[in-house]
Amino acid sequence: MTIMKGVDLEIVEYLFSAEKECREVMKVTDRYPELTFDEAYSIQEKLIQRREMDGVRKIGLKLGLTSKAKQEMMGVHEAIYGYLTDDMLALEWEPVDFTDFIHPKAEPEIAFFINEELQGTNVTAEDVLRVTKFVAPAIEIIDSRYLNFKFTLADVIADNCSSSKLIIGSKWMSPAGLELGQLGMVMTKNGQVVQTGSSAAVLGHPAVSVAWAVNKLGERGKGINKGDVILSGAVSEAISFEQNDTILVQFAELGGVSFSCKSST
Ligand code: OOG
Ligand code: MG
Image (cartoon, rainbow, N blue to C red; front, side, top):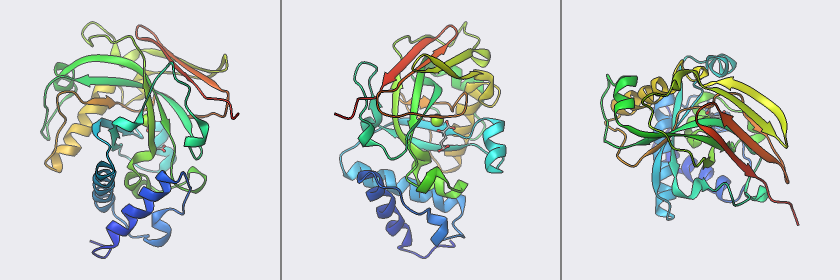
């Protein structure tokens, strides 16, 4: 341990209240530069427990930094994971409220619906596909609690990987028969194309990304469960949005998912 006992709970409260009060804060490593990834994951776990005490429920997992481009940008060689909770679920037909966010960005994702428990440290993409009942198009809204959306890897892990909201499209398909590793994607904002990409950007195949997370959880004696929803990682860079904006993500085969942001009045 490089941080003192008790300090972890102080950091948990710090991040918990920043999110609750929709306030950006200095990154944790400004104060604790020695924070390790392992300690950051412990803080993340305690932050989720704190949020559970506040009435939220875990519904699954999300992956971050799954593209080579994003990893290079951060100067790292590993993806990261965080938890999804029921209060993060937003709906296509209900505009999100911009005032609920600090500086949100939207990104295209593929969601996995898990139908069977899976735990281990040698889990493969095939194992993941075997326990996946459906995949669906999704949008994740990330909203770092840190000033100007800037952080180190340890910071973002502690902050539950910037998780804020997710929207899942209505077309759910079995992964069998889908070329899940090479689905084209187009993202528009108010009708203008803002990103294009392919599901191959997610560690070569989104199921590889989910397998990575299961193995990482396995090292901590945990796994994924029946009923879990997993966001496998952004297919392109995240895009900022503001009041009145509409974001639409369309995947080949899987179809579209969208959300709008309420006006301020
Ligand atoms: C971390 C979360 C990234 C993804 O899909 O890559 C993420 C961040 O960039 O704030 O969710
Ligand atoms: Mg994401």
